[in-house]
Each structure stands twice: as structure tokens, then as C-alpha cells.
Image (cartoon, rainbow, N blue to C red; front, side):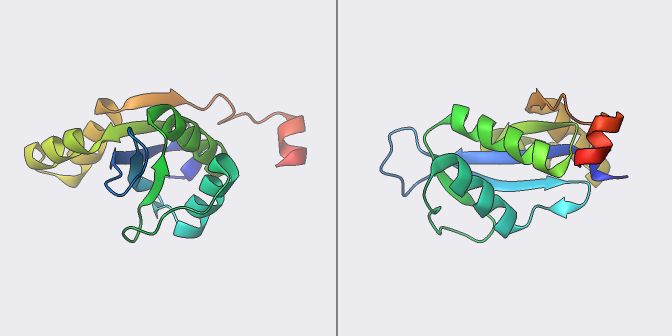
Amino acid sequence: MSAEKSVLTVIFGPHNRSRLGDGKRVMAAFNEMGLIEETTLEEEFLELVGHEPDVVDEGTIGPFNGLEQIQKFSFNLCQKLGNKGASLVPMDDYNELLVASFKIEDFKQKLEEKGSFIDNPEAGKTGLFNKIFN
């Protein structure tokens, strides 16, 4: 399955080292191709937030001011990667689904269904204009 037809799943939770009251971080971001490369995450973070992310754990990125900023980050990533949308899943929901799932396929589907979905209206456009500039 190509990335164009897949959903970007973004797991997020609190950013424990943040000076911000509602600071959050992205714990993982992945699609059908696997985990999104850290350099891609860092580039998108820098473009959106305007400063380098904190180094907390490998594969995590933050701090974000709150959920709205994570939504913007996820949407921008989704467009950059050509995913049909992004499913934002809080860490608590992720943990519950992990315990309740018996197969990896079920787990991935439940993650996509449980999260708040952000649609990428640009995904799947195949017009001449899109082919020329992509």
C-alpha cells in the first residue's frame, strides 16, 4: 500500500519538561511505510514552531503549546507525505488499545478509528496541474 492511501497516525502526550502549562509532545508518528524519519519531524517542527525541538527521547518531538499546534503539525506532515489524513491519538487511548488488541492489524485499525481524524483534501488529486507541480 502506498503512503498516498494510508493514514498518518500521531500518538501524543504531555511534555514533562515543558515550561508551557499545556505543553505536549508527539511520541510517535507513522504510516504504512513505518515510523516517520526524525529529520522530517524536526524540519516540520522548526517550520511550524520557529525553534529547534527539545531532545527528550528518540522519536519524540516537542514541546507544542497544545493540541491545536499538534493538529497543525500533523496536517502539515500529512500533506508533505501525501497521506489521506491523520489520526491523532492521545497516549492514554494508545495504551488502552494496545492492551485490548490481539493482532497488529486490529491494533492499527483501532488506532485510526479511535483518534481524531484530520482529512487531507489534497491527497489523491490526480489532475494535470497536480502532476506538473508534484
